[in-house]
Length: 444
Image (cartoon, rainbow, N blue to C red; front, side, top):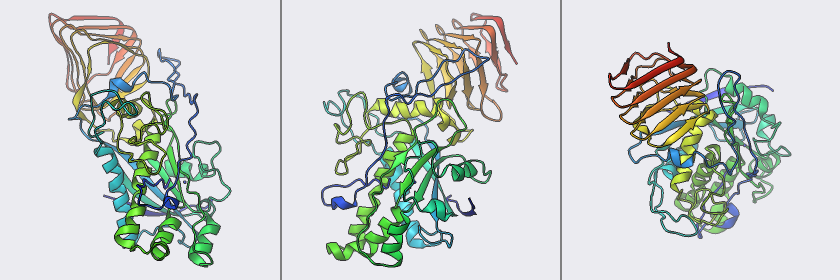
C-alpha cells in the first residue's frame, strides 16, 4: 500500500531511457562521479573485524552473492519525497489522479527493470560468460511524501549530488530519518529549479524547459549502518508539465500515448540511480563506461539499458548484507534458498544473512566478526563441513530467533577466543559423531 503524507518542516535523475524516436532534448543525464577510492571502514574494539573497502574496484564479494533463480523476493523500502513551495504548489500533488497514475507507472517501470533482465551471453562488449540471471529478485516498495519546504524545493545554485558534504538538504534528510512515522529507506528527493518553473509554468513567459535535470545518487556505506541513502531527482515536475502542455503542439504528437510514453521512460533512469544506491557503477569488470549498450548502468540515453551481468546482481546482494542498505529491508525477511559454503572462507566483517547458512562437505567457514541471522534462519554444518567461531558472534538481527543450529555426523564446530552463539528457540544439536570444541566460547 502506498503512503502519502503531508509533512510540514520549517527549516534531488530524471534520467530518461530513450530510443531513437524520442527527441534527444528530453533525455537527462547522470551526474554521478565515480571516485576510485570511495572507501568506507568497519571497525570494532571488541571483535576481529576488518576494514571493508567500498571502492569501485573491490570485487571480493560479487560472485559469492549471485542469487539463485528461486530466491525469495527481497523488498527494499524507497521513499519518494516531493518538495513543494510553501503554498503546496510546484510539484506533483497527492490528490491529483493523473499525477498518481504517472507515478504508479514509473514505479512499476523501475521494478520491471529489475525483474526482466535481457539475456546477453558471449558478447565481448558486455559479458563473456554463459550464465544468466533473468530476474534480480530485488523489488522496491514505494511510499510517497509531500513536504512544503520552499527553500529546499528550489535547487538552483545548490549542489546536486547528495554524496557531497555538506549537502543542502542534510537537515531535511536528518529530520526524515529520525521521524518514527517514516520507514527507513532510500530517500529520493524531487526538487525544482524555481525560476525555470515560475517562468514556464506560472508566468508562461517561455515555452522551453531550461533545466539540466542531472541525476545524482549516494553509494552505500560499509561503516555507518544507520546512515541514510539518498538520490536527488531534480526538475521532474517541470519536465512533466512542459511535455504535457507544450511538447505535443511543438512536435505534432499526442500527449497520450506518445509524449506521455516519452516521459515514462524516466523509470529506467531511476532504476539506474537505484543501481548506484546498491553499489553499482557505470563500469564493471566486463565493460568500461558505456561500452556495453545493454547495461542498465550505461549513461547513454539511446542505449537499451536492460542487462546486468550476474556478478553485478551479486554485488547488489552483497551490499544488502554488508552495508547500511540492510536497514531498508524488513527484519523478518527470509529467503528460502540457503547460503551454501563449499569452499574456504573467513567472514571477518559484519554481515547479515536473510537465509539459512549451510556449511557443506569441503566447506570451511571461520567467523571472526559478527554474523547476524534473520529470525527464521537455521545453521547446518554438514558431514565434511567445518564452522569455526574465532572471537566472533553469531546472533539474530530480528526480534526473536526461531531457527535451529545443528552439526551433523562428520561435521565440526569450533568455538574459541570468547566466541558467542546466541541461543535459538529452534534448538542446538550436535550429532554424536560430530566434533564440537568450545575453547573460550559460549552459547547464551
